[in-house]
Length: 405
Ligand code: CS2
Ligand code: MG
Image 1 (spheres, protein in one colour):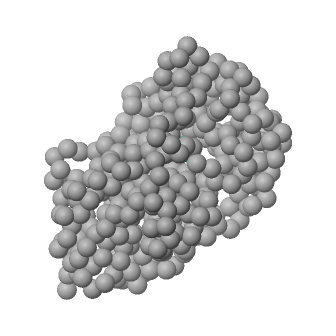
Image 2 (tube, rainbow, N blue to C red):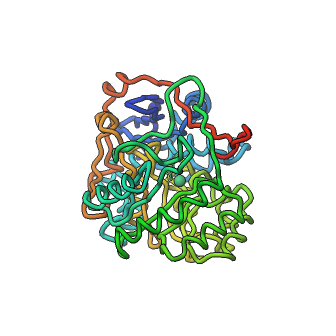
């Protein structure tokens, strides 16, 4: 007997940062949770869901996940884009959660079962200067991480992406009605960062998986130069070396360096990923389930990537809520060409709203064996933290022109 969707509600909650959460309830009382968080543009997704998708959901068969996906994607006529794909993702995750709960199985079992015992995870190390960064790397290794992303301050620059005091999960978006502005100097960064990463490698030894994120700030030829300079460091990956709206840019980088390349956290569909994958211009694709149409669409991207020996390295910063993190882990456990999961972690207040079953031990995450995705939302705690405007920073070069943050 088909189980129908009785209601769907959108919650926007801000336990230290904003999250857009979808609650779908079936007529037999099963609740599924989805994540639709889009950092700095939360209310646009909330409205897309509330005003346009929720009314279409009520009465639909909750079991027909793929049909609902196709209906919402093709049925809009206007395809892709971060707002649309985050909204569809939330519905997709909620329906997989319901399917798991109805079947009494964790979602990874419905995706074909585990192909590995755990999901290799990396976290962030950060330091205003080298000694601080080395301490941060040591602290993350002491927590059990075998893979660490290292970001460092740059002399002469007040604010640099990924550099924050303390090792706890930080949030790059700042509270307030408008974005903070930062000065960016690409030459200062390119002069400084190869030496820093070489020192981290020397300090940490050869076995630690070391990652670095250039956050879309380099031109292709600058990215090629950085990749070359970093070859002796043997990075696990260099992330977002250049912006990739123009996917051909990555070919130039690729031709010049053997440093492994990762990219795609801002992508939201297989169409954004296709050329990079089929031209083998990168080693790891970074889309995450909550920004790329959910489990149903992301698994198609991973399957395409498998044909070209590209691995999955999903995005997992603080703006990927515990619901999407859980979904990513279920998919990772069942995906043969999975590589590594980013796990920045969340502030303790976030974990009072989203109670999750996934666990971290000895370098690996596991989604747990609870039916569904394994995340519960405390709605009373969520309501105690209403939406609070926050924006990602904007960067300007020294001459005052806006550049990529
Ligand atoms: C980042 C993110 O985790 C990463 O690799 O690039 O921190 C990114 O800046 C945020 O997701 C933006 O919301
Ligand atoms: Mg990144």
